[in-house]
Image (cartoon, rainbow, N blue to C red; front, side, top):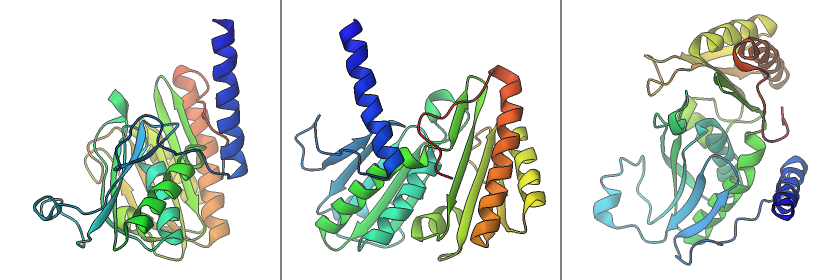
Length: 260
C-alpha cells in the first residue's frame, strides 16, 4: 500500500508541476485504440474525441451553428467553465471554429454543470490539435475552482476572449473577460456585488438557477472591460467567496495552482 501511495503522489506531483509551468499534459491514447479517441484531462472526467467525417444525418441533428466535415468533441462531467476557457485558447491556436456549447446540469450530483463542446474544421488534423490544446489547458483553468462539501466557487479570466467565451457567455471577442460563480447561488450574488464595487467593469449578464443556467444552484456574473479592472474584480470576488463558503463546511480547496 505504501508503494502504491508513493507512486500516486509522484504522478500527481508531475501533473501539478506541468499545470503550474504551463506545459502540456500528456493526452496520448492510453485507454483506447479507437481513432476517435484523443485523450483525457486529469480532472473533471474530461474526454476529448474527434470524428474525421461526421455522418450527415447526425450532423444535421446536432444543432450546430455551422456544418463541418470534421468535428472535435470535448465533454466532461464537472466544470463547464474550465473546459470552455480551455477551448477558447484552442481555437486561437488552430484553424477551427466553435459550433456548439452546451452545459448540462451535472457535476456528478453537485451544484453546477458539466459540458459538451463541439468544434469544427475542414481538416481533421486541425480539429485533433484543437482538442489536444484544450485538454492540456483544462488543469490550468481548474486552478481557480474551489470545492467544499457545501458548494464551490469558480473564477475564470482571460485578457483576450475568443470564440468559445463569446459563444457561451457573449464575451466581446478581443476584450478581457471574467467569470465569477458561487454555489450555493446566494454566495454568487454577493460575489458579483463585490466584484462590481471593486472595479469599473461592464456587466454582460448574471445567471441564476431560473435565469441562464440549467437550473444549477449557482450565481454567475459575466463581466468585460479593461484587463486590469476585470482581473481586479475577479480577485476581489474570489476573496469574499472563499470566506463565505468557508463558513459552511471548512476551507474550500483548489486541486491545481491558481492561475489568476
